[in-house]
Length: 243
Length: 308
Image (cartoon, rainbow over all chains, first blue to last red; front, side):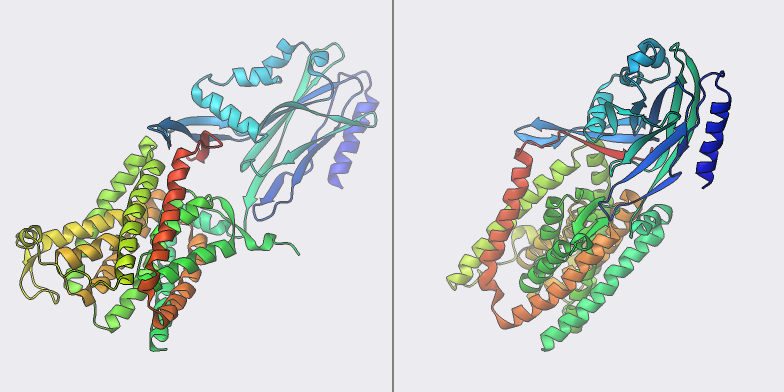
């Protein structure tokens, strides 16, 4: 309800100020997405908003920066073995672009590149070492670095929306949706950042959290489980022997 | 009806598996242990790896399962007064040293990236040895040949005469702690690095090399395995963060039921006559593991998210 009111207010301002520069608002359907790892159902995040007539929009979605360990399988002495691991630090875990129109009709590609709004500029910004090449390929295969630009759809004259599908490969953390507006003269006007978070849960996630936060307690719990099972097995075994 | 219910996401192993498959592995392990007295690590680690569980998690989970299995055995043998606690203490001392060494072996192998290769190759070699010896034993039993009585060898005599002498229930004369501790140390290295108890090595060595009384061997070794597996569980949990308690719970449930089944089956039939089947199973596991080393992987790169 609040969301509808906010968008309506934005739309009112836009309609009442037709002479003003291209102006837009943006809202995300869910600030926090809880993804259950026990289920295979898919979810999406919707970005909706209002925009002034004649504006062009390009949105960049960036996932949280993470550290990765890359193990390469190499063929040695007729066997496939892992080589020394390579580490890649502070890499974006997700990258995807959305736009209302074909990119080159919105603004010159050089202009868009300044804001990282072309796939080429995003990949150029990364170090061109082996880890980057492997990581880019890994991310692309899982749809995490999507080079295909998604559509920002118009709903009526002043509203727009686009969908960010949440896949099982998307990591936990805060995602930034950076939306840029360009005018009819192809010049950059404004940008707005909105955020959403992915929280991964499972029925048994508490165990993982415990193993990280209190490893000693977790270790004792694990041993107690085994000892208890051992005692039960011992009783059952002796029962079977007597039997 | 949805079968999703039977699939559980294991957060530490980071895989979704059918719980029945895990309970079945436990059941098979328990049954084989109950029937043949062979440790479960040789079944648990390869099977979990085939299901996509990371090798380090499979090993750590196997170690935890070993705690349950060895405790139940120690209780049984202890009730029958078939545990030599003095000799066990010497084996445990060596075992703790072995865990310490094994811990550094794991760290080194993980840093060089050769962890999986070395573990898989070690399993292939050990399974080849065990399946061959099981097959030889089986043929001997089929042909009704009695095992050859062996004299204490020169090597064993020298080893047992080393300094740090002790007395135990199993020996009439004093023996050195050193060779027993060395044996325990090798067992400890096996426990922490491969998730196998080392009984396949310690039992024949104590029996044939050091001529320990046959009725005391299994219980004494199981007592060592119980302590070393507890310490290894601690290390795997604290240092490598690789024990999946949930996976372990399902596996142990199967093992408890399997051990009971194995004990009942063992009391009704001569398990030794089925040793050839055991050897066959180990050959298949060994072949599958070796094949995985020779087959080109579908993905040449494995990428893991890590904390800095």
